[in-house]
Image 1 (tube, helix red, strand yellow):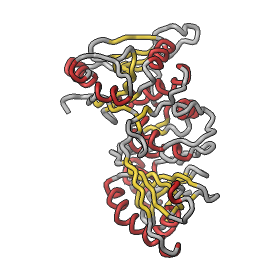
Image 2 (cartoon, rainbow, N blue to C red):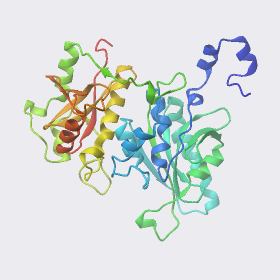
Image 3 (cartoon, one colour):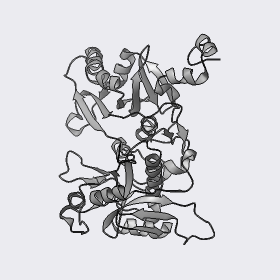
Image 4 (cartoon, rainbow, N blue to C red):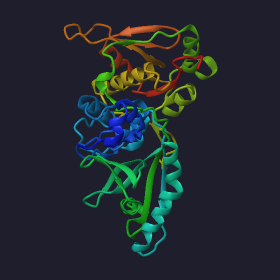
Amino acid sequence: MRMGCGALISALLPFAACAEELPDWQHLRPAKQQGPSCAFFANIPALSLATGIDIAESDAFIRSVYGLRRGDFEFQRSFDKRIFCELFALPWETTTVEHPELPYKELPSLVRQVIHQRLDPGLAKGWVYSLRVNGIHGGPHNVLLLAKGESGYVVHNPSPGWIRELSAAKLATLMLVRSTSEENRLKPVYITQYMTIPLERSLVVAPQSLAAIPAELSIAMEPPQRAELQRKLGPAGGVPAAGKSMPEWIRRYPGVDFAVLQRDDETEPRNVIGSTLKPEDLKGLLHLSRFHLAIWQMKRRPLLPVVFMDGEPWILAGYRAPVEQQPSAPVLAFDNGREQRWMNRQDALDRIHADGALFGTVELKPDLTQ
């Protein structure tokens, strides 16, 4: 039997002391992808490190969130790892290094320089890196660089599903990929592409499953918290008005961190939620909101989930277990700092859909004295 801290230490120390000495990544479990979904499943351990919750085995939850991009609830199409970070409120920044046109055998050493000079300092801070690599069949693939271990670099690969240490040479070979951009289509240009996720890691022991989130939850805010929430959810200039475009929503509500993306060829940010989804397709937003609310209640991150209804932002402030025989029963509580409203699930979905299915987070410390 393999013992994490060694048989001798385990015999001399209590288990808890042994567990505390393990690097946090050794508590992680791999997340195995379904279909072409590596950009989603590769990054699940990053979420576990940030929140202490492992969603990998929660199929219904994952499908509901995966489908928010373009209605794909069956993992038929690839995902976008930037959208994963936006929905789960993880900070990110993408970097592409285009290598000079040299003989191929000379390029791995350049990738190793990128690893040592750019990635090692971040790993030392606890950051992780979502990497574009060569898949086993030669196509593009995504893995997550978790840490620097004793004998190499700790990598999570969602296909076939493992976490192991790789040498710098092996990692460099994986990270040396052929550019597929239109301008490089007719010539062999190699790049190294990674996404930096500067985590504040909160994992101490093995992450809990999604079942650890309570079936019912309602937060009670003190008057100073309500005042702070009202201030942050308030419109710029103090005049409530619905936005007519994504940039206008962002300008009107600067206290909300919207889940948006902006490609290099676009002039304006766009909502990461698919524009053609029906109200029922948005149930993943309710699941995400429950997730963020529970993490806030556990005091692991100071981020509350925000949806837009009736032209203004509301946080999810509570939820009850649904009653199958009473679909119209109010089970969701939304709060804007001025008032709280309970509504049933379908009413909430219809209202969220009517405002364009906008989602984001607002920062509010669980304890304002901290």
